Amino acid sequence: MRPVVESLEESRIREVANAGMGLDGVLKFWFGESDEVTPDFIREAAIASLNVGETFYARNLGLPELRHAIAGYTHTLHPQLATDHWFDRIAVTSGGVNGLMLASQALVEAGDEVVVVTPAWPNLVAQPQIMGARVRTVPLTVAADGAWVMDLDALLASVTPATKLLILNAPNNPTGWTLTRDEQAAILAHCRRTGTWVLADEVYERLYFASDTANGAAPSFLDVAEPDDRLIVAHSFSKSFLMTGWRLGWLLLPKALTHPVGKLIEFNTSCAPVFVQRAATVALQRGDEVTPGLVKHLQRCRDTLVPLLREIPGVQLAEPKGGMYAFFRLEGQDDCLATAKRLVREAGLGLAPGSAFGPEAAGWLRWCFASRDPQRLAQGAERLRHWLRTAA
Image (tube, rainbow, N blue to C red; front, side):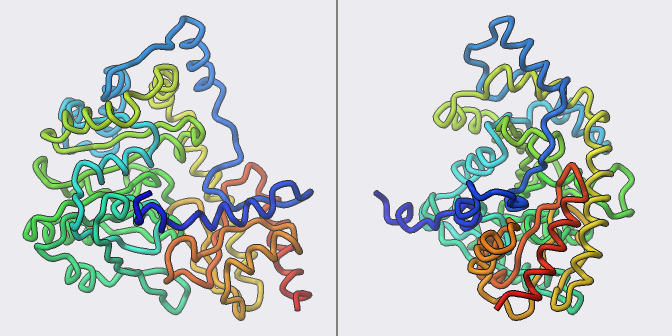
């Protein structure tokens, strides 16, 4: 086994979840997914595909129908470029995580320098490490109100001509931090000068609650990019379309990379299943029946949970602008992994430890508030309050 693979850390989120699975009555907020099932009409499209026998291989880059649907969806969110601009820049992938790994495989060689903004979903650091890269992290910092913020000057100083790839996730998992359009423009301009690729994980783009948007989406690098920029944007059907278990995503690429990435897909998964792609095509065609209502519900969930947590003595928390997570710190509970395990055992409350997302997030906890019933969130907050009063 390669040493870099041996040294990969197992998921601390899974470690907590494994401690809680099988226990009765645990309120589970540890994983990054809604507890709502995929809408009926999306599932029915997959069933219809299976019923007509679409069980064979498909094109590496995805069904043309789905790629056209993604192109139209992208144009709707980013209308400065025509729909036909996007088709030849789309690669359908077997999940967002597969898309991100394909980007690392396409760009990163052993010994390359990669910079990642953290805290971040651990795959963003692990994937270039698996490719043999030297990964440096640039941490966000915590403001007095508990909000995570970026020092733009520090980030730009960390990206030099020796930096092959810069990876950012915004809206961010776990912190809810979101880039501004001016920050994105400054980052792209700097990376043009250094020759650095940018890999933007924008899977939470539609889960955005701030009022500074005209299209119901968070600021995107696509809004400030030129067609020939060294930019790859990763997306997923998981979050905005309630399709986590379907494992389907896509990459938006410079046109020259699309065919080579198609070759990489052949050597990874060959293609995404046709029936899943049929379901995704319908999800995009009827997306207005899913995503706007989902975002409104998530905002209600956020606005239920955040005030309740803020009322608890010793909690440090900022209201997230995007994503589906409340990220907070408990005074006096610095070992967040131990705290998360105790909360499962002693309070029946399942949260993710912040240390799963990088050392700078040690002492923090992530609460996924994507719940069908906001009252479950209130019940969980009361369990946390009671545990803090009684825990030794």
